[in-house]
Length: 573
Image (cartoon, rainbow, N blue to C red):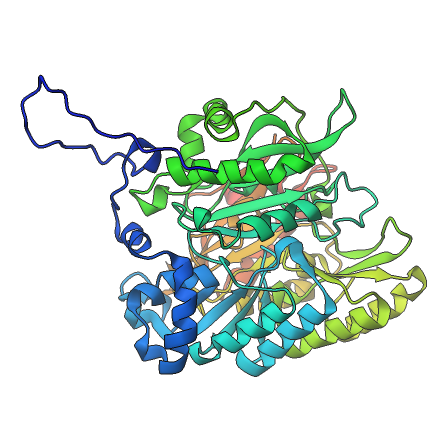
């Protein structure tokens, strides 16, 4: 698909011959603004991020960390899933003060992209081997279905790539201003209630466009969701582009409803429906058209406004659809229905459930997504022993073993429980997520993984038998990798003042966020009570207090989110 030609400035012969001055605008290529307007854009114009792979293999892995060009280290390395880790011992108060080279450690986080969350036994064992050999045993399942490794040395990267690629995995465009991992239902092709098996669409886009330089210089990251899941588990409401399965009421044909412009971070927005009906075979072409439109019309002047959500918010769905159809597709898409509202509580696929082929799947809950190489090996062994070896990751930092004979599910459940991977977790274990946090992340202000884990333990001890789903999402900074605005209790890491007047780790509290699926009506980002913060040490006391008030004051059938909308500030404090 060809990019839109940039508008060429012409001179009117009747005007005085003064030097032409072009407004900088938003740096949109389609309007002729091709000169970089910030350092990130300069780096990308100077050299495509995909070109760094060969330098890593030929130069940096052989000469070591000190040989790495800073523009590659803090920029282009991301095109292959590599971020420098935070140097140990730097407190959160210095996150926004120190220069990048002062925050950098000599080790890397490496993100393995797992499109659709689909893993074979060989792939999972390979990741486990890499974890134990090169990453000090680390392995975190993310809420975008990836697995992240830590403590990676640059000298080891070529060997890691070779091992991953031998089993069909990669880290290409796992980060950077690129098309990131494609979210999909972990039960694709197996869920008895699914509308469409989206696996072919995901595989085609990955094979055709990931690593293609036509899409390796986007204004910012570009997140995709393609799912036929009846529970809409891949969150079409908050992705840059999303295809949510629908059945056309007039024809009975199955296809997708197209959404654009969702995203969280510091300026959260719910995606907008374009109102189109996209056939399954059209998905790759339509995806490429949306990505091309973003590439050409996306804002490139200010990094904090460079996500597609800002373009969609300014244009509106009608104009976006018009430009998409006329300038990129060359044809009009038919109108179509919105997805049907569902029970959002089913989105994590936890528990034992039937597959449509007569077998069963078993979903279990690693604690806030944190695992290690030995645990991955154990999961792979159980998947081989009780199923076909196939394993899936979910968008809730959980995992699923597929293809288990129903008569054997009880034995698998028992072995998973014994391994600390409960299939019937408490509400707190099931519904708590956490981002990477200050342990490894250079953007973080507070610790998250250990804090969220200890919070789970405390709540299980203090509120035994609590049986109402309440999501608790813990984030180390304002960027919302753990989706704090969409949680019942969203905790944004910050420095707060304790009773003695000292600045300590703490959290700003968001309450009542929810994603309801369907046409997104009723979905929202909850409320922030002015000044509502808690220190990290007081966090268990706060959460216990607000949950007890909810239990005491809720109306019949009322969810936590609904209660927070009518509760007083005092009740929520």
